[in-house]
Image (cartoon, rainbow, N blue to C red; front, side):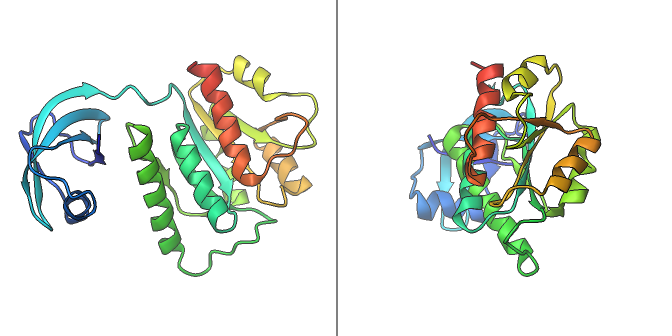
Length: 242
């Protein structure tokens, strides 16, 4: 069933007029008709079964039906501090991280990033946010993860103290495994740092540890940057949900 996200709370509303973008999506992209049903998720994570009552190119009105709590959100909140990668790699990272339950994605400019965001940063963020929206629709999420403004690596590790756990996968770590780190974890908010195509510099890894990050190994194989975040998220899902 088609899924839409709105910022407002719908609990006391009987009808909902969609904004122009969502109206165009319903009427021109999906070509829905009156009477067809849509799931709408509001700003509090409640789902509403709605039906199309009026439809036009720029204006669609829904009848708001029964509500229920969305149960697809994980019991943890992972913020992915992802070093920016080239082209489709970053797109794929955002899509798969969203499907696997990430709470927020922060693009990070670490030392070995080959991508520079000096121009059209807003355009890139808007595109990445749309990727997260589409992945949330497809996977039945109760929220759309926010794609934050890019920040430097030093700015990113300064935020470690606000998390219950900060995971720093590192190819040279041989003792602490992700499994044991997760099984010892009792909190809710997790920071996950994933490096760029060329990996992190040694100094970056050392600085992250000084700020409170936990270096972990993901096994004997070195994962690509677009694989690592999704792999860790899948392991967190396995340990906490399945």
